[in-house]
Image 1 (tube, rainbow, N blue to C red):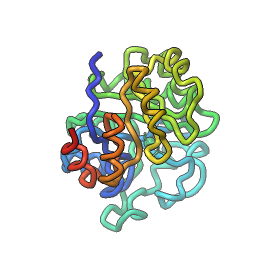
Image 2: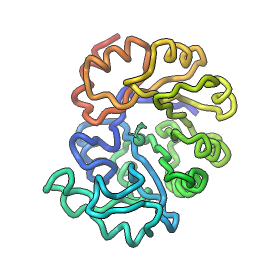
Image 3: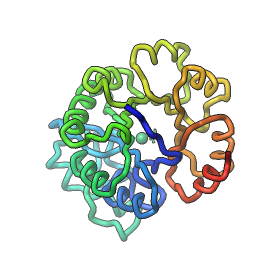
Length: 248
Ligand code: G3P
Ligand code: MG
């Protein structure tokens, strides 16, 4: 396995330019010459893996309520484009399968973030990895990640050979080296706003690459690159591209 991480990963597709986590977002990323996209996956009540960020439908669709309480058929009744712009009105939340087909069709790399609804950490990883394993075969351009240790442990069991990254939020784990030993990580994904330089050094000492989310500002991208970060997730790759490719 030779994981080839890009310097820029389009966040939720490219969330500044197309509705997040949609097929349209995947195509917009490819049109902008972004090499990889990050997408969030969670499961419906009837265990269908879908590309969606929030636990509830309210912010990004014309529906409401918990994703975990609705079936695939119910969720497909809602549209997820018009909150972003009228030009995207009517588009539907994609299944993982549909999103993977678009990512492969556009020859993109993928960071699939397992984003379980509370209490569904194991089954979300299982359902998502089951679909992923049937469709995806390019291990050099795939990274599976999650904030959930349970989801990551499930990924270790189901997909030991596939590159996996632990997502770290505001709270830095004291025992990160032990977590790495257990989960056999390929990368650590850190919060760009809260990560400290000593923490990035700790990860580099462990010999792992680091990605930072979510960076839409050139100055911030430059600082992180100086700290040794390998790449960033960005809603607006065009805003950080020059900064990332001009620093040596
Ligand atoms: O995977 C990086 C980033 O997407 C993590 O945060 O909340 O945007 O999924 P969030
Ligand atoms: Mg995400």
